[in-house]
Length: 207
Image 1 (cartoon, rainbow, N blue to C red):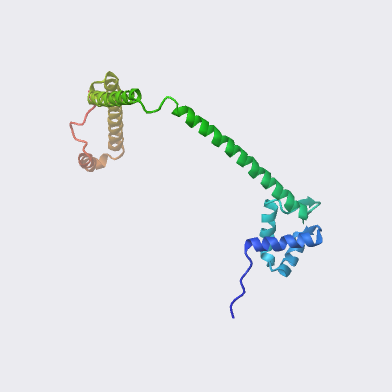
Image 2 (cartoon, one colour; image 1 turned 45 degrees about the vertical axis):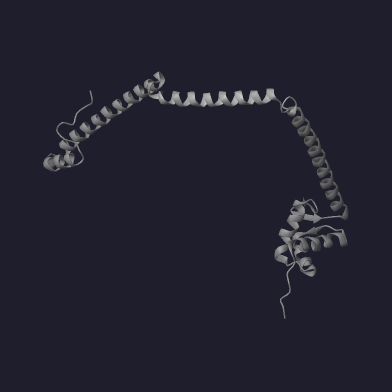
């Protein structure tokens, strides 16, 4: 025997709405959780189903004292449908208006662009100018290394690198002096380590 199919979310919503419509009363959530199974909606699902109805304005809720009550009347669904219908009508009207504006804009852009010998000549001239512009940009890029602004930027970058190199050289000398003072008995090991990392006797500041 096949297992009975459970209700879909939409079916659960319809069944919970029937509870409200049949009695047109106010309910606490715990009351709805007891009534839900009679409509095929397990108590664990009632809270989420009712909340989805609240989110869609099909069920109303309000806190009275310390309790939260839920209720719904057939007119609530009608009002919700009327609101949705009005919004769709407004969206349709705005879309039609925008469409007419775009059609008018398209027609205006077409004016003066009809095919003619004069238009063809102008397009050919425009194409030639664009090609010339592209070629000039390529030629200009070839001389970028001689650009005064580029040379100035390279000069500034060189100065920054020079200053940074001497600053790190100074830091290395300071570290060497500290190591020599702190570990005088390890002079040979320290000198070996310096050579391994490239700090030789000719290591000096950049001029």
